[in-house]
Amino acid sequence: MLGLALAPAFFGLGVGLQEVDAAQYADVARRILETGEWLHLRDMNGPFVNKPPVMMWAQALTMVVLGVSNLAARLPTLFFGALAVLGTFWAGRTLKDAQHAIVAGALLGSSVAFHSMIADPKVDMPLMAFTTLAIAATLAARERPRLIWAAWAFAALGMLSKGPIGVVLPMLAVGPEVIRAQWQPGTSWLGRIAGLKPIRGLLLVALIISPFYYTLATRVGSEALHFMLWRQNVGRLDGSSGYRDTSTPLFFLHTALWAFLPFVPLTIANLIRRAVGLARAREMPGAIARIPVWWLLLPLLLISSSANKLPQYLYWSTPAAALLATDEIFALSERGAKHWLLGVRVLSALACLAGLLTVVFVAPASWWWLGLLVATPILIAWRTARLAPVHRLSYALLGSLVAGLVMFKGAFLPWLLTHQPFEAIGERVQLEEPNQTVLPVCAMAPPYALAFYSHRVPRYMSPTELREAVNESGPRLMLLGPDFLPRQDFEAMGLQLTPVARYLGYPISRVNGRFLNGATREASLKPLELMRVSLAPSAL
Image (cartoon, rainbow, N blue to C red; front, side, top):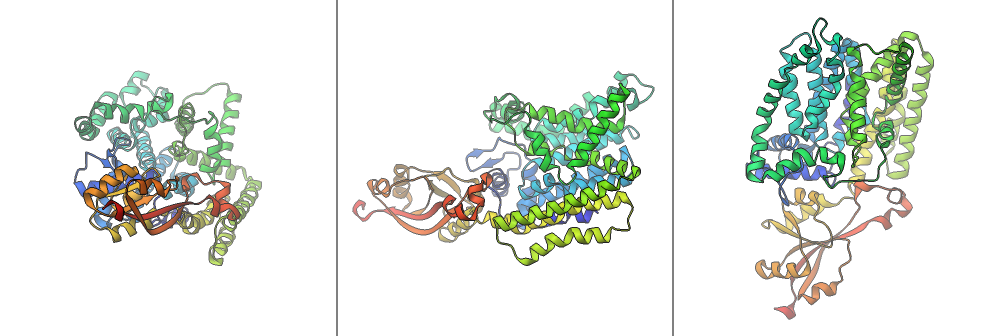
């Protein structure tokens, strides 16, 4: 079951990195190797203060072994994903039993959120991994108190992944039940809180994170520390970070409908069943099994109040949604709800059909890929026909997306990334100018992906600045972006442009219908021209 769920993760590991965030983090990791400075992070613009270092450290370590490559940049997300599955299994076994745990881990590993974090490697996968392990260790510490120190250590690593949310998220998950008698029967609520060792635990967190944050404050300044710890976290809630969008507080509700596939219908059903039971009982005594509810809903309320909303904020709670869906699978199996099995099979077929139509509409695909998409759910249904209902339901859920994810990672994603030409441009730049360290860019913002692939510093230059650079170092390459700049602007500065290569690009992080439609796709592509710029003969 776990193998089936995780299989799509191994497709597409070597494809290009998407602009902006994923390419920026990979370039920071590359610069760690160049400078040897693991605590003082830098990107092409100077000191990197956007995010803590765990993801970039892991990428740099992988690059030490595999070299600077797409695979080395993406492989750490697979490692952190495995930790998240392990943490989900640990939490599920503590809350229920090993059977619940393995199904929950498999559901997490098959989710769209999980595979999206591998396809677009950012800091959210290590955050999910360490917060899940922190929650699981806190649950296990009820029986083995020393594990609470592991919980605080995992929370510290979560804080080194994406800031204070690494500590806040586990507190939101376990806090509502820690204060209840069922957490540790026979103790007061103060005693139960004291059992978490909050003061010494926070001191342990401070000890683990202090080398990095102290270096940040001393090398870059206290404002950088304030930006990373406050404005990039709390500042996202009140808008003081500068990031705002027009999304409504309901943004994450419709995001969950696709991010928690294939098990989102079961998660919703479980929440409804729990709400109905609560309404009938008219009381809510403590229950450790309720922790996945707080784990999902309280962070959901928190991020829904944010002034800036991105889908990956919801990904952190995917393990909780998987645990709730698993609980519903076993409940349905116990009630013999065979109509649910049929319904899930129908949903599986519809999901595969939707994937097939999407691929045919968007990108060319071989018959091999199309055959895999159709054959996988049929094969799963045949192989599981004699299993217990709970296992048939679990396999049907996994099969509904596994084939589609393999198609996405193995066919669609590589095709999509061909429309972001920075890898090809970077290779050409290294071939044409092996000794340069700066690549002038005109008529566009310098892309982080270009920095990673060219091993240069892309720097925006006006024609005036470009003339000064050519005067100092002679003819050099320049990337001319899609924003229109008349040739007369360069000629007026005494510059001559010689074409080297022409590319067509598209900002694939903002895919829309005009791009996806083959009839209008070509018109949506923007030209990028690699030029050799030199002084015009008349200026010599």
